[in-house]
Image 1 (cartoon, helix red, strand yellow):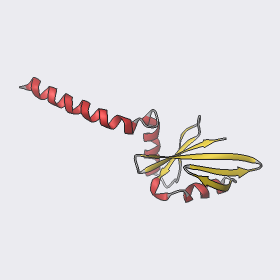
Image 2 (image 1 turned 90 degrees about the vertical axis):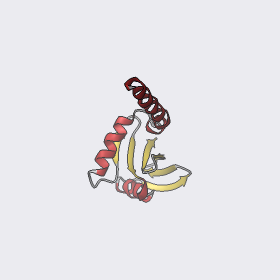
Image 3 (image 1 turned 45 degrees about the vertical axis):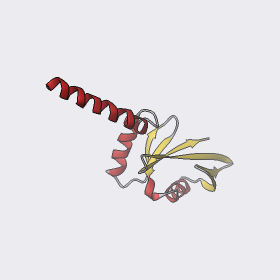
Image 4 (image 1 turned 90 degrees about the horizontal axis):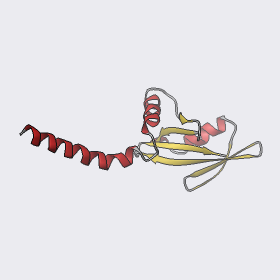
Length: 114
């Protein structure tokens, strides 16, 4: 009887992992992202850096792209245009593209590309 319960619990666990893992691992290793989400939710910051190479940041999805444009303006970048999920900025004749990706519907991951 105990062996049967163990097999059922194991089967349910494997079934759940199969369906949840694509969501958790959509952006690679989820641990840095989870750490950034914890920092984001426990502070008043609008962006939290996830990684340096590539430069990736996370923000709450409900705040939209205005928060990105305000942040980049504060860093000296002028907003040029949005093309799909890509935002283009200009500073001292240098162009920067920032790509947005939804993460779990509650967050946006921003990737900086030169």
